[in-house]
Image 1 (cartoon, rainbow, N blue to C red):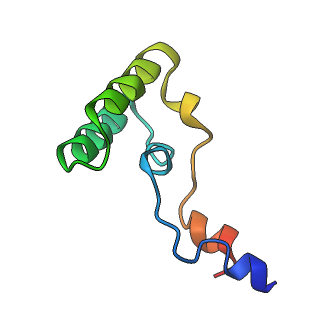
Image 2 (image 1 turned 135 degrees about the vertical axis):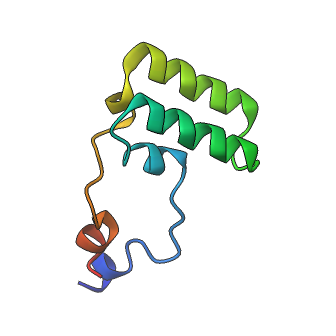
Length: 76
């Protein structure tokens, strides 16, 4: 039980975590642009993500993360 509650302690979501909360291509594009503008992802990685989005779609990054994902799966 303790391991489950500490699963996401000090966890920082990455770009893929944010993308997996999106429903549309436009939302994903906005996330990528925002994180690139803030310098949280490099231009090359942003381009790779955009290419994957264009060729394979939103769900190619993984299944959609539901509301309160970290609370439900982290034992919080």
